[in-house]
Picture 1 (cartoon, rainbow, N blue to C red):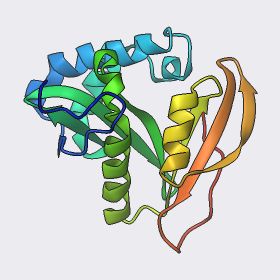
Picture 2: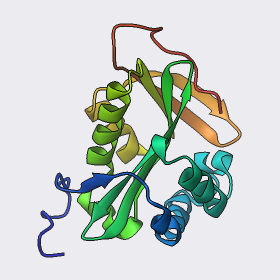
Picture 3: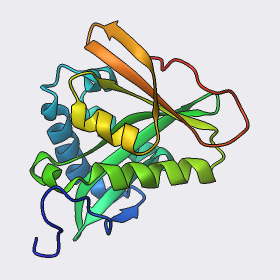
Picture 4: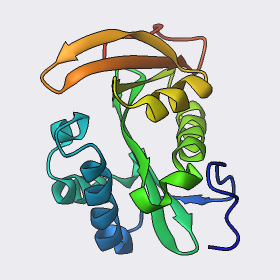
Length: 174
């Protein structure tokens, strides 16, 4: 790990690539790690079991990307489209790598891909307790749409407009 920046600084030289069939086991392990970071009780619960979610993503790799660091699947992001708006399902990294802030450059890459695909906006929901995640979205130009109380707890909905066409935003369907 000697080529990583000091803890607390984002890694900007991750290799971003498409998910590949051989990533299955590594992706399942990473998603289990990401799911466990919120105790398995938060918003990831709506996505289902991490292994089943990984299998679904392997079947539709067009809407996800991997942050590859030294040959390791170190970060993962995925989204779904809803009427021209991309909805971020997950954007995270292994907990042991969290101090290097891999998620912000991954989210930046995801947004670039969405823009290239002609998506007019992107939305995400985060638990109110996720202050680091909130700071990441706000730091990348997302604006808060509002707060909701759900069975998962109090959540914040964020939106970022990517193009001048299409509608401004809509509520994320949970």
